[in-house]
Image: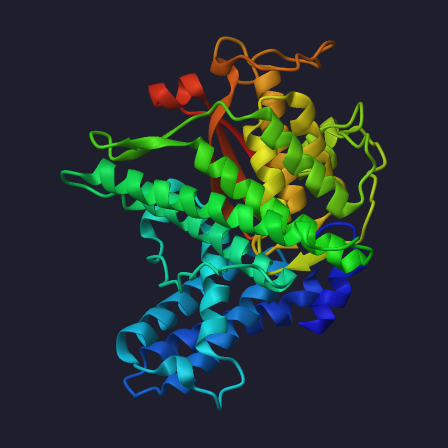
Length: 430
């Protein structure tokens, strides 16, 4: 793990090179996954301590696969860990109190809940339908007041994860029967009430601080606010639940001021230039070019403002993706995309450069769309509109992994999604 991390941080992209010399490591990863599967299926009784060991191994091998950009392997390691966690929950009592084990179940549960939410964000509908159930979560008791940055961050990060899990569960297993819409509404209102209440407590806590001079403290405040703003935006996007269609209703008209705040917080956290945007003349194929993309590459030198960063938790990248995929302003979207591309980072299975390129491809297809048909106007546009007509916007992006480090992204416009038409497909390798 340490060796891969050293290799990772001296590179340019948030993934280590896929070299032939790594074949032994790939073999080890495959064998480890097989071993975990065999141990899990073994008829011999496993203690809770054994299960904690297996889940720890799953986390480690998941991270190893993420470093290499091997999404399928990472997802299989995660799936194994989720199954073991579910077995522990079903068969064990008092497992949370295994003080003698170096890693407790509460810590592992928090890791798997976060990794599960991340993974679901890059799956197709077909993959989601076959995925594991959401792991049990420890719901927080809101503190009467915040006393430390760590406490505030933990609360708002957990609130963000809970909100994402709530949305994802509605998409995969929507409630049915009479009163389903009312139950969903009540849950959303409780999220909203608690978010605003805790937001007031956060403002009170921050207002009591004297001048914050420590860089670490400033970054903590920015990170906490970034989680809070994301939760607020997702609450506003949630329009309701359609009992007939068994689907949540989305309000696609986001508040541009909210989007601007998120980009500003992210830019400040990354220490990015105030005027950073997608370079003029650059094209998406400049980043992670596929062999067939060679003729489209602009040959521009790709800027780099920082070394790649690896994190197993969410936060910054999820915020930038929210702006790049949802904002109405093309200017804000370009800045969010540039922050993902030029400040390479990996948050679990999320690769900022891949995400940035997908968002850029989406924006380009929208800007070259005509009457709801994506990308039909060929060539570069001389004048770009600040706002894109609703019919030309991308409504759905389906991701399918077609090879070890290759994915197919299918983009559907509002018109295509409603008509059930096939969208525009792009192959992206890394």
